[in-house]
Image 1 (cartoon, rainbow, N blue to C red):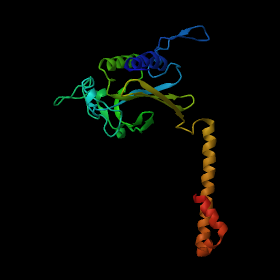
Image 2: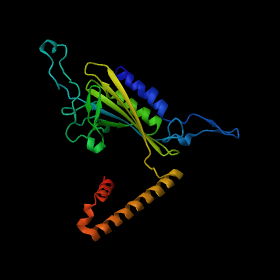
Image 3: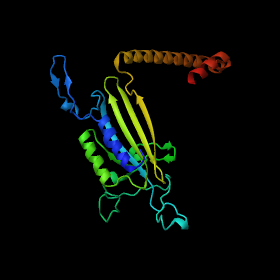
Image 4: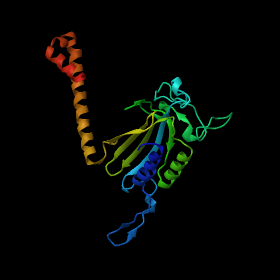
Length: 262
């Protein structure tokens, strides 16, 4: 990617095409019959196995005139927009196209700033700055047609323009067969002087570690461990009550107590 247009091309031609299941593919069963899995188009990704929980774009941007251009350049650059800083970034709400709100007007969803607390987001340290977990969010949904329409609307309304400093593409996928949740986070930084830089991070985690046969074994082992700890603490407490201060004179027993609580 090298600019705004290539970013939208990536979203339309790569992300939506490769992630979303479009429901146009057919599968041949062992009986020779063809299956048209139109019912899978709502929520499944293109592998028809993993379930798409959400895709969103999150943008952080700077205010206009957030810096001062040298006098010799003011004629050619009347406005100066600085590199990103989370202490002076844009946090106002707008109408579509980044138009100022008039009295009693309601901001559009994708042009409404949401704090890091509301989004439960963490700051990200990238090449050209440290970015907050908040921003302007556009949810693409779980259907390819809806994602395509939203992407086109964002493009026509100049959702990304010269004040944009980074856009995060955040994808959450769940595979019901392995009980794995995968978070894909792609960041595209937009330089103040033009150009882009991308970074991608993929993390998988198994939230339900007790599922399946291995989960049963894990429960049994953890139960045995807890019973052992409970019995050990009961025995030591009983001896402490009986011997009182004499209990702490035994160096070896002090070492055991310290090891348990560490």
